[in-house]
Image (cartoon, rainbow, N blue to C red; front, top):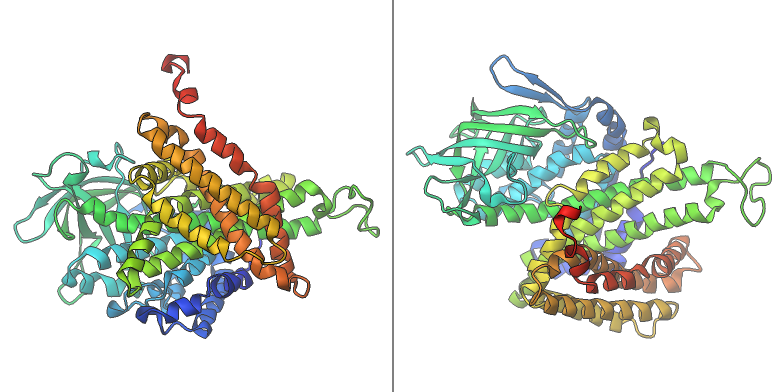
Length: 598
């Protein structure tokens, strides 16, 4: 059966030993009160919630799914799986829905370095459930960043309290990635509000029974809007109108036409929403809607990457437990469990290959998520404008890498975990096939991983001549230089420096190639992103190994860290050379064939 224990020891290692998060928090006014004891208490309580409340609902929620029904008032309702409402109330009453919120409006203002750990626990324990608070968090971030003070005061406190939830409404039946061609309209009502009409699809948490109100952030076009992305504005459209005193009022004409029947995340209501002249209020300035929404989108992209990370972790834990219990065959070197008719399958090299692959990507990903969280904190809170600007450049550069690489490797870990179970992995009651189904969506929504790769290679690298990348590479070189002379990681340090140079050379080649070949970015992007991710993990792994090496003989945790790192360098990182060669093959092998020959 699937098992999950929050990886608290590794989370504390990443926060305290790898990044010295307490010192970072102490250096900024906004996070100074986050002490090590407070951080440990938050992680410990989050682990209890995830393990004891959310994980037990994971399989039953998948089996039951969400139920859509037509209401007597003409509005449809959606019932979430048994136990979800009670769990959401517990989440809200514990203050978890306000963890990263703005303190001025009732949020707790916890740093992102810490909340990424909480996000991972939620996704690992129950991805379907986790999506409801995660969408609300993104919604509040957008409102806090771009809405008026009046709108902030009206909408932020009840969402932080968990009484209301939030969504983002972008996609339409004819418009996915190309948001410039959306058709949803917003017509002025003459009283400062707008009548919003149109259909949005794939809306996570678009309708449900967890909260008394749902606040939709909707992209729409004003009557005189220019064509394309510059004509898009952002509107707040509540499910129920809000009275002057903040209470819930009359129903707004926003109706759930249906919910999708999906491959996975069945406990998450993915809705078709019909806006029939629903009353909405514009956020910020007209025409800036897409830019405002990307504040939320970038948050969600990191969050959805962490969904892959969390699911990969539970797949690893489940498969490792199974491999130590399931007996089948004998070890190649002779019987290990001599008192049994066969040995546990963990003696077999191929089973170990799958387990170590999942573990290496999981632990590397946890470190990378914390690093991206650190950059978000620096960009938001640091007193030095230069530090803020550099961190913001890194956030822009690394967000597509985190989303795509986490979700790709998380899915890979889930498939490997399922494979370790053999035939049982294909049977529902063992829980592994659900992990595979749930993880698959993370590679698709919030911008497919192919789109993330285009964003990285095109917008974040080639368009600015590699300036953001140079900031990142300089930081990587500095930390690697600091490890010279550390005993026990000499070979890995040399290899980390070599592949970093490989990435730099490949980046320079791509920037130059894009100047003369319009297809260069599209042809190279997916391979380039994977190369970028592999080298990033190598950079983080050698740093973790340097911490572990002097302690490995006395402590099993550090011994395992060191050995997992060596596996990463010897068995996973060699793919970097092949990926660089694939990038430099150019677009010709892809574009030479006439479309009629496919």
